[in-house]
Length: 337
Image 1 (cartoon, rainbow, N blue to C red):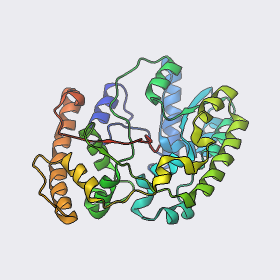
Image 2 (image 1 turned 180 degrees about the vertical axis):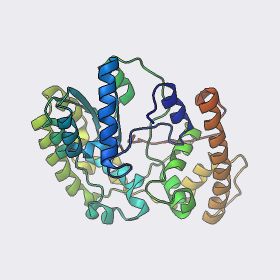
Image 3 (image 1 turned 45 degrees about the vertical axis):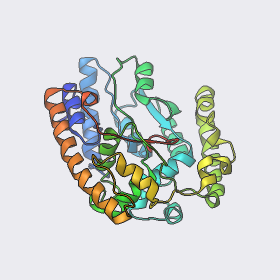
């Protein structure tokens, strides 16, 4: 049964991720089931006079599926919104979101091609679908505000956007896999993000080294050429205004520093200090810090679950609840989506 209006907001409030979306065909739902739903929803929208807005971050890779679906509908006018990041920051964020949980070395993940940066070709395929208007913008902006302005929909306040966590956080989660067992179970990262909006500055997780630069430069230029062929000049100019599409990658400050260590005790102490309500012991070692953090995270998960239920049932806004001390990240690249 589809959710609409208040039911969508309640479902999003109840989710540990803070949002809900349509399923991804082939991975989360049978393609025919999704296609049948979209057909029914568009027919319903035509009868009742509204414009349906449906979304999933994985759909950017599904132009073939939607080519067939829209053909079955007689190619109605459709606006496709996509928000794009340069390969450098996307590949780093994607590694920590997906790759590291099965392939801990960035080199192995990069060569496996399991999560390629394929968006230039994907968007070119979307642009070839008849009667589709493709609107691509840089992902560094507030995408909800952008969509509201483009579509003329009323704006709604939203919480913090998904962002790559700190090296200390990922080091802890990799050593304590019960909190983050695989690439699809990222709930703990969203809980930490909600609980830790301010506090000590920690180095973000970073995997890209100078030896990866040439590969990523070739990737960026290849996708830039594809996008320039299909995008209006104004859109292309906005996207490629980001110097990471054009400037030599070795000058990126994170590459100059090299990959972030996952077991830095000073960083882990700062991370733990943002979580624990008790002072840290002098000279605390890795195992003791992990044990203290794990105990605190268990309590945070229970408290977050309780808060989400109250928010969903009573409508209490999350941002009015007391939060513990917390941290921010240096030069965070934003969402990996």
